[in-house]
Length: 411
Image (cartoon, rainbow, N blue to C red; front, side, top):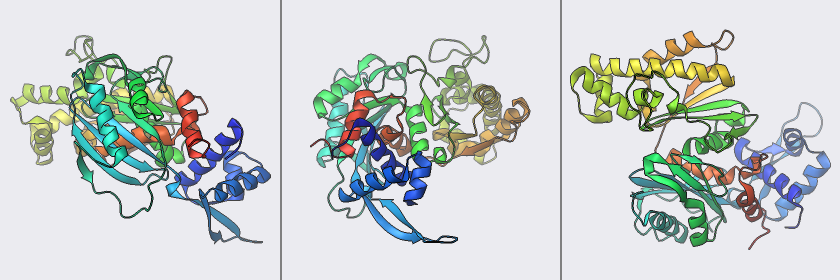
């Protein structure tokens, strides 16, 4: 498909918009993307000719001629997402319209000298369809015909990534310092690769498939092993000068507090991360049943367990209020493994966050979404699928390669 870079970006924006909000008329596309009707007519005609769009039903009108709606052909493209953790990998294959085609996992040792080779092996096992060394988390979707073209690989890591298109990772929890994840995977896989902090990747997924479809300014907070935040401002994930924005877990709470994994004392994560919760439980009753057991005890009414979560919720709520006051989002989305016990957190969180919010912001919507471990990997896939929204150029040359694959200008 011929076209300038500007035209290519506009075509992919049309595809992504239809994939995230559903069928729209040409008039609605022009309005949402701030394009002229003539430009939309021309570009959608091209996209239909290449099998990426199809005409659907007529949209009823209040007067005059009904508008023909256009829908995305989901098989226009797909992306592979990988979530890297301290002991395993989760991988998902996701279509452009957000449908998950399959999910897998495998053990992983980030401290191994062959860690990046093992990461590449896992990706290759999905790309090739062999599944070698992987355990399927879900069955592949029913017959989709020929697999959609693979646009690229997204990798989410629990650390900072200065440039997602380069993909050099600093992740203390993985023991990685200046790890060339993107470079090694691109050399091995011969595909576009984008690497990003895992919470920022979740925000990209929210931008495509979640609250970001209707909100341009929002916060994503994650609770689980650690604590994170992603800031979306005017539709873009704010990354900071070195890709390290969003280290919410290291907001100082008490300089005399417990030592955090980062080496400082009294960080938020030291109180409300999973290790902090278990330390608080041991201090109260010597419990050592693990986080799952602590949650189960709280749900069963154990006073000590409930107190642990309520106190952690209050600490989290006060810190979240400070962040909300500074950033002024439209909505806050809470995600992560810790949301499984959210009713226990909420007892302390709700009153604390509302009490500390600036007047006029106390009615902000705080929405807790259901969670599955594959959500991290879906966020990583969204790094690739979100490149049409990459007005800030965070995806760099890798984003250009993804867009070229989407519009068919590369083999």
